[in-house]
Amino acid sequence: MAGEGGLLLLGWALSRWLDIRLADQLHLSFRAVLLGVVASVPLLAGLRWTLRTRSKPIQRLVQVVQDQLGPLVASRSAAELALVAALAGWAEEVLFRGVMQAELVRRLPDFVALLLTSTAFGVAHFLTFSYALLAALAGLYLGALYWAQGNLLIPIVAHALYDFVALVQLARLYRARTNPE
Image (cartoon, rainbow, N blue to C red; front, side, top):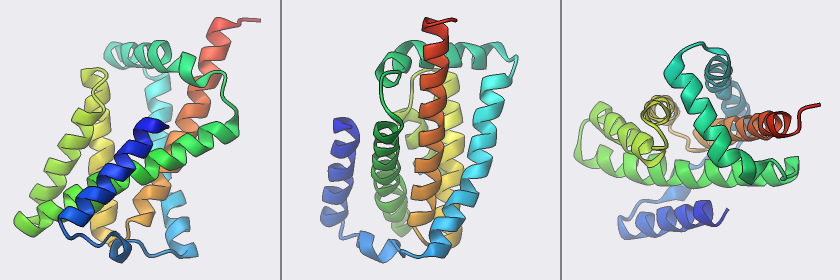
């Protein structure tokens, strides 16, 4: 949580330094929340595929994630995981879409800004090459949502909901693996 909180502070500080008004990018509404929930469906479908595929690199990725992150989440309650997921959604979307993508759009064509931001998002999630690639694709999707809708709340909700489901699933898988019945 401290890491995500630090990212949120970094995003806020950078937005101030770059004169990016985050409040202008956030439009709180029931519609935006609903769109964020609906927008999480492709991400969740990707998670499901990741957990069921027979692809060896992806199976290794799942194993690495279970080994490294499983112990951190296995003993956490659903409420704690929801808090971590919400903070991650806010922090990472503010930093990558709200600040980085918004600033790059000022200087570069929109699509180039989207590609660069998505690549940076993937690199920031480098646990394995496969993880970085999947994160970059998710970043491309979240950035396109932000670009198309002009509302940072939509990718925040989609990201947070995805992270919550992924963390709950990871905790469940790790518990099942370490406490077989």
